[in-house]
Length: 203
Image 1 (cartoon, helix red, strand yellow):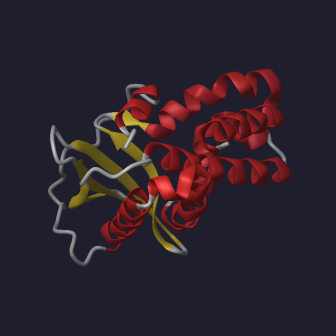
Image 2 (spheres, rainbow, N blue to C red; image 1 turned 30 degrees about the vertical axis):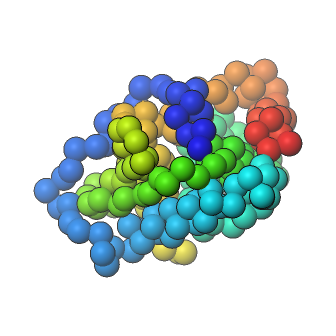
Image 3 (cartoon, rainbow, N blue to C red; image 1 turned 90 degrees about the horizontal axis):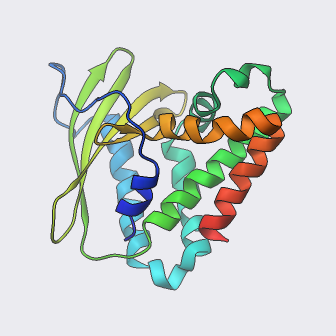
């Protein structure tokens, strides 16, 4: 599994969400935590078949669960930043599709083998209208990787709107990465950038 190195490339300091709020509770019946557990179950299945599936096969298997697990329109708008308001409806739809593919490609690239790892979902804390779900990737050897999922209620249930690796916000990192292509080429420039990143990850 090539999880740690790609995460390092995403690193940009962001707000720390790892402190557990007083409203934190066990996860057994929490729908937000159940969403994470479904994602984790699929990841383990794909990791166990990673070599046979190849990058494109992993991408095809993971894209549906990515669409089910993440609030991708909200994430795309946040990652784009203020420029989002000036984009046309068609450009917005194209960017959401491209961001969805990139998200699935990133998981397909990062989770490319299985070495006995397991996922553990911890407590859930209420943060205003959102929930924060603590989780860990536990390897057979070495230290666990701490993850924090920020989640929001949608018409399709609780969905992820950001992932924190320790104190590193994936969306804040994406916004920084997207700023240059937007400045240089607007929505079309960003779309080309997203497609190029996806192609680099899964071909």
